[in-house]
Length: 545
Ligand code: F6P
Image 1 (cartoon, rainbow, N blue to C red):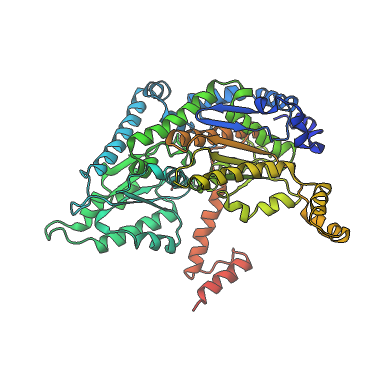
Image 2: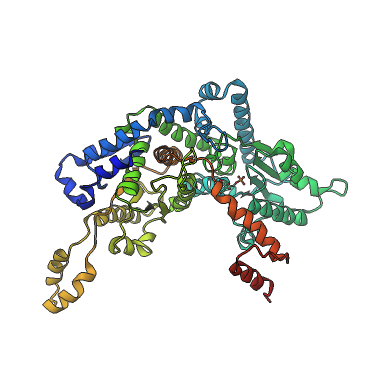
């Protein structure tokens, strides 16, 4: 990307107040967009029309249109693993699947969709039951990373669409405390287990699956002396989503209960595949289809809209503007919705695992920074956690606010206050409060000039913090699908401009390798290749009482 052009574009923005940009009366119309159930207000970003057009030229110059076409057409854009990136096909009509995947693979995908829908229908109708014939009351999904986050964020986002007779739980962390917390709520005979793992080798998932299998086998009542309930309970109640069929069968899961994962679907983009089974069990086939439909609408918008009116492209370019031109290192994701409380965590993986790199696709060291540090939590909680820093530290933290105009709960006044706080925070981050303004306010408080001059500096707010506000009417399946697809495409566009491969994750390998090495040291195998610090920590563990 033309970093020189970007830097020179940003000269005046670095000393400009965002508020001054609103002298242009039409700003809100020119710096907002609507599509696929979402409205984006980006007028509080520190950017004017000339600068935005310059960003669009930079995107055009790197051939963004061609990159978008290549992705949707199945080019092997994941170059370090020689793979296509086609999660978008999973939410497209069958005719598109046939065009992109070819007849055979399209049929395989359709078969997997039908298999998944049948499982959901069978469980909901009580046709698919536990090994003692009882209806399932609970689903336990075991997975981590992309085999967990997409399901988790959507389960909480769409909790109002869930079938109340079937509780769906997700377990990811290898910490036994997390597992015990789940298992104590579950009944062996009425729990359906879904193990989600593309590789079926991930340490945490395999350990958790083994522990749950042991829990179930030891708790499974004998169905009949002749029938070995050990195999029956796993045979009947366990399902797996994986690309490693042999490993799944070796684990002992019924071959007919295995749903596929393809190498052209990245883990963190896999919700749209059979990875979404626990979600579909929770919200039903129709709502899962609506989720995919919403994502597909965003796909079509992304593929066919000029960059200046293209929501994912605009969000991506604003992110590049804040990260590389204005040099802000972080991004806050602040959903003002309890239902979206898992969104910041989900986007940490989707964004930082995709673009947290410093080497280009061709292996050259990059001369620019890439993914920001993404953090956040649901509003209004964040206002009582980190908003102090956002308002009064010298760090400027660009923010994405996300809010639904209509709430789900009966507490209408609470929702109005929630929305008011969301709007107020973006206004406060932009407006700030100068020393003069603080002093004028304090003069009305019967304080002496001395008292005012002492306290006033502590009450000033820097302001000039840029933000997007994403607004939806209501958080429904199709809106959630569009929202997730929006961020997927935003991150894809940023990867193109940063020239990184957004679809591998070699950075997680060293931690896994050292984890195995340190585990054996903790089993007593001396390892002098470890640092003195790690060796002493291992010794501490071994000396534990
Ligand atoms: O976080 C690393 C990672 O490889 C993710 O990309 C992936 O979603 C997760 O681990 C789980 O991998 P698997 O689905 O193979 O268990």
